[in-house]
Image 1: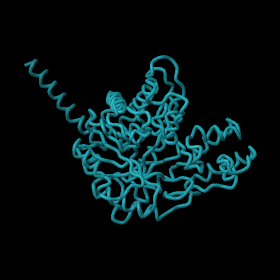
Image 2 (image 1 turned 135 degrees about the vertical axis):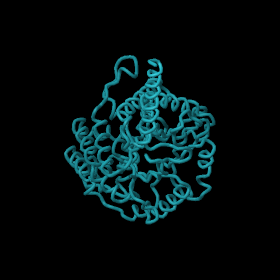
Image 3 (image 1 turned 90 degrees about the vertical axis):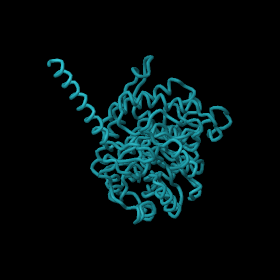
Image 4 (image 1 turned 180 degrees about the vertical axis):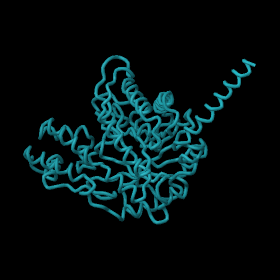
Length: 421
């Protein structure tokens, strides 16, 4: 009888564990074969905007297309105003460019998600020692900003996708995207850089494994690298993509060691368009993300991705699209939603049109950018700093120019279905 009771207790414990685990998993957005589903198992169309320019500045978004990468922009600014004031500007920019008011507005407009492009160096303060997993000192400032964003999104019943936009060393030849230094080893040239990226994802997973506001982890933004042919700068002719596939598998394994809840998102080579050799991956809670810019809005234009969805039984998500006309936006969104594909438009705001919000450039900042483009005289340090700090202030939601027509193009009446439960 004693053995029978012990067996009964053991079976009961197993039954409870079996019941609790699925219930816990059901609190998360997940990949269900060819669909993304919400916590209740209902099909979920993610309709979102990318917070481009907040943690990773690209030159064109700042009126500096010639400088391209953030590290170059920052260096050129520091030559004029000094490193201390440059740090002061970047802190003010991060404090103002995205606030609760932006997220509240997005929720009110009808968006249900946000994609956060992250720069690795905002999350890592120092690296010393020999083992990547043990030598990193985490920068709490970066995590503090993610925590605040989560709370703003939670208040609006919206989802967050974390995106490794600028990986250690840089993941492509397009240096504006990843803030890569061409004079240092890339992500692909350095085992240390790869280990650091994996360690950062492990730490993110450890901290947020129980956070249901996070819909997924976008493991690596727009890799563009020729592995077989160095002349294939964007990796568009790559037929194997073995290093990319291997890095994904190692990253997924590290995440799953601590977080079995969150949906994972992978992007192909050639700016998220070349999947040769990348698939399959050994995780069923994974989404394929493609990026769509400037291509036709026809069924044929997305047919290659639809075939991958069928072949590998995994959902599709358009993680980036934009920088076009409102008419193109409306047609592109309609095409994707007709095929059950969610999307994240790029970006929420920048200097210039084509997005829901526009940051106004003040006179001092315009003089600074003219000089940095080689089109004007060098401004004084005082005027340059004043222009930068005014720009940071003007990046706030209440100082932005609102483009309602762009919002309407993305969220037309037929697509306004409210926020997730």
